[in-house]
Amino acid sequence: MASKRKAKSQEFIDDSDDPEDTGSKTKKSRTKSAAATTQSSDIDTEELIPLSAKRFVNVRTFKGRIMIDIREYYVNDDGENRPGKKGISLSVDQWEKLKEAMETIDERIHNS
Image 1 (cartoon, rainbow, N blue to C red):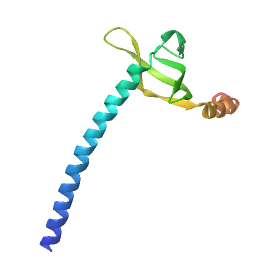
Image 2 (tube, rainbow, N blue to C red; image 1 turned 60 degrees about the horizontal axis):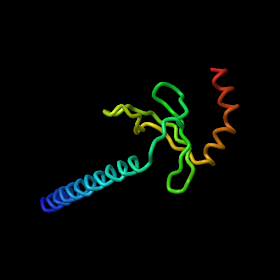
Image 3 (tube, rainbow, N blue to C red; image 1 turned 45 degrees about the vertical axis):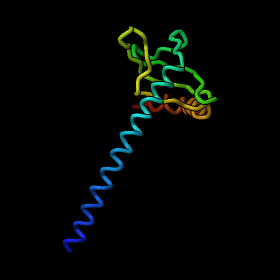
Image 4 (tube, helix red, strand yellow; image 1 turned 90 degrees about the vertical axis):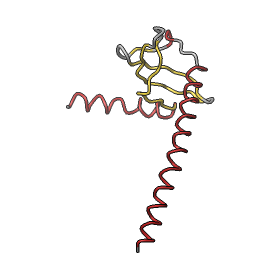
């Protein structure tokens, strides 16, 4: 019995070490690629459609697809508006479905 527990413990230790290393490498590479994507896509703040002081809508192309991006922005150290993590990008199909649902959404808002 002790050997089974030891084997399980050893497996657990080995498994937890490997994904951590792999996960951190993956996270780092994701962070770098996300930063590269952000840097490569210039944000023209004149094209942003304001929803509030920090939330904007932008129509952009990502990997050849048109996306409707509804996102919170922040001001970086240089005083530039930059997109934050909080937000959603809708495909054109999803945008069309949202527009179709507007009447129902309005009804629910007014009936609340």
